[in-house]
Length: 193
Image 1 (cartoon, rainbow, N blue to C red):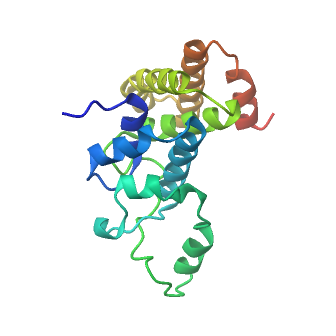
Image 2 (cartoon, one colour):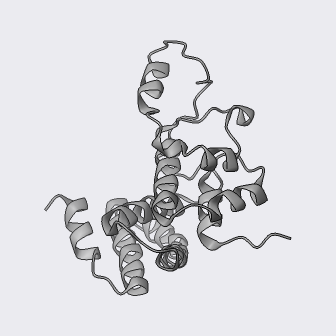
């Protein structure tokens, strides 16, 4: 039985092909923290932009993605060309972007929390494994607020207000876990102030 680290499980949850989990953990363990952060951010962006094929067999296994350092690829040009119908090889049918739900079974709140975590990690620039694990745990705890927010929205709270409250809550939780104070700055950027 393989012991999976929390940071790898966060990556594996977002990665669209769920095969070869143990081999993926081995590949993940050999990466420096910066590469782990880059891989998580890249996969989250690919999912958000619908860059993966609906045919899961056309998607690399997680270990292959990690060992090949695919986060360094210039894939966005290929994605744009495939959307224009250029018939480039290995593009396959695309999963449409899902702005309100996580295509891998999580809630819209989980998907939003994942995006916020990636932005937080990029803002910090250089988390160690321990801090990344703490940030992931804090993000996961914050997602529990989602059902209450759905209820508030159903009872008339504007969705925009609920999303802003949720974003602030997630960022504050991560701040507390890491003893930082980035939430005010990140919320200013999000609101355009």
